[in-house]
Image (cartoon, rainbow, N blue to C red):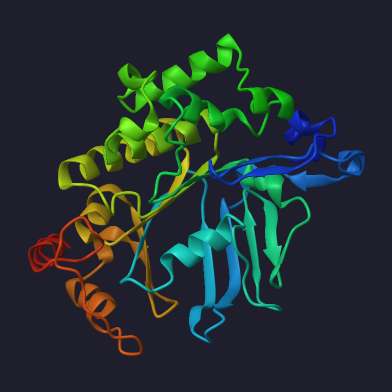
Length: 325
């Protein structure tokens, strides 16, 4: 089936200038140019949600962060990215969202049927696809002096006029949508409270609610439970899993905690030294492979943290995970 771009992006029909809202981790998108109205694309629902082809990323220090990454993720999948610190998980997610680019002449990234980057250059209309991607940061990216409700309403900024977003003039329907999202993640009672007064777990749930208000079609979560206590981490993963199941929204989540990947994700992509060393069903992830992923960082040896919930793989957690696998 073929449909017009204007049908997909009708909300971008009338020429608002692009304004990045880095504080929120969101973007105000330019309206689609008239020339786009005559283009046709395949319907995104029939395409992979994520297509990464031969992606390489080298930092200025000369260290290779990603090496020839190839990855396809279907609509509605919940995928865990596993790997030790420095394996390339966060870099891969940021490349998917167009927050950074690969090496010049290196590969292509397409999200939801639209190009994000190719050969190390962002697509001209990258902000349009960014508006359809919910990115959940480890640091939450909330504005502490604003109320929880206002922070969550920031999810509407990609589809409201700039002047309304600037003045924080939100309609009753938009506020109701935000309150519903807060209720879904269990923190509606704190809507009027300043974001700075919330706990880490509540702030992370607020970030998830913001992605719901954004009406994201895929969620990229960069170590969303790394700084949370075990009980709160379970709650956050339960919410992401529920969103995936009930709304059929794809979720790609980077984790250090193997036990959470085994429990909540049907597919695991494991990275080591910037390369994919495993891509398959969770139940096929063997103890030997887990040991190789986490203990064989030969080119960049490092000490692993022994503190649970801080990105480290503790001996107890590792044994539990490998016994389960």
